[in-house]
Amino acid sequence: MKAFVLCKLAPGKEQRAIQSIRAVPGVTDVYMVFGGWDAILSADADTMDKLCGLVVSKVRGVDGVDATETLVTTNL
Image 1 (cartoon, rainbow, N blue to C red):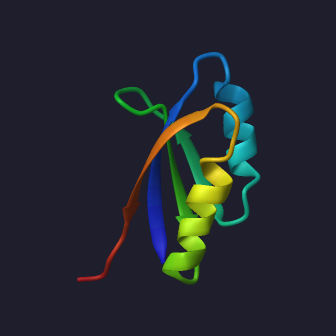
Image 2: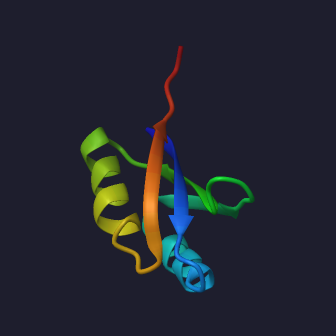
């Protein structure tokens, strides 16, 4: 399954947070953006449980990540 994760980053910690996020297994791309969110990442996982662990334990555990919103893709 694939998801896009919107991230708000702490001011002054953006570069270090992005480097840490890029190193998380399952994160495939990271983009810095302007607007209400600071970064968007794409992630792949085999199951919803693994995706949850990736976002909650790994991405949200990165120093400098203040908030996330996860958008899980679907096939219609």
